[in-house]
Image (cartoon, rainbow, N blue to C red):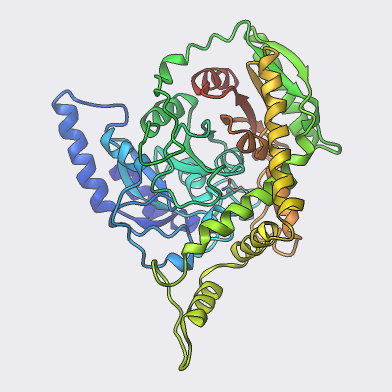
Length: 454
Ligand code: GLN
């Protein structure tokens, strides 16, 4: 804990931590020492962590990297963080992210961008997003691991951009209670770690059956670490042809083939498969996620939480809402609210939202059919490129940024577990990740397959 606290102070340039909690960390570390001396050391005992700014932490600023939540200190603790503290973990502070978890570059945070510890020619690169602070902090050894959340790729893409491991569990495996909601039917929290084994241990501590979250599944949490035997003989790994995009980055294609060869050498069978509705995933996601966001973000009205705009004489409650929301939300969040409100509006609901929901069902069916045909896991790249420069996409069409999620959103739409594992470096010397997609509730098997790629 002390060495992490010192490393955090020395790494201010990365801008990964948006709140530091050294007193809490030292008190939790002392308590962990006492538990270890008493012979009662649970899985995460004494492990110093960073917590994404999306998790409510009692008495500690929780802002979802948004101005609209400035000054908000929750009266309650999220289930995930409470589970981690119960397992002996230590909180070093809160980690920056894209505002309300909307983004792929950590540039929309009200705290300013986070810098990737990986560099080329001293040029500042994005750590990815939205869990960019978590990824940068783990990659730079500012903490042993961090929490992330993933609605369309926000654990896996930053993990790939920083050379670490990140898993999005099956929807319902980890409680969403106390996690600021973005798109409730897609959001899922998970660990971001240095190794696959750490991910297995930390996921076991984060997951629980939680009566406070109606979408938490009543499925017991198995011992994920016990599944890490390294034996994947006889497993069938699918390679979906629709993920081999036209004009695909040659180095990513090469690492993908190498990953398949590693799994084959370990005794798995590699099978070409088809997931025919893949190309509709991104448009469906960018209808469903903003729709849910527009509803979830209606609660930030200047009354219940955080920021309230200064009002002029004669301003009533409507002006208060309007001014607060115009000042409090950044441009990407406003764009999502407007798109979401539009696709849910009476005249367009069927044309956009309902159609996207039908497409989502087809995407899920593609995966169901692959698993029913005996496929155990699916191997794809995690991202279409390595980390790009901070500011590089500033003037681009927002859709350019959305294309980052092309390999990851299908997994959220289908509610499946997906893990990103470091796959090697590209010619620029930057990390790339491979993604393995697993059967529902099969995180143990999935991590065991990921172990072979590590
Ligand atoms: N980049 C995606 C988006 O902006 C995913 C974000 C996430 O997973 N939280 O919506």
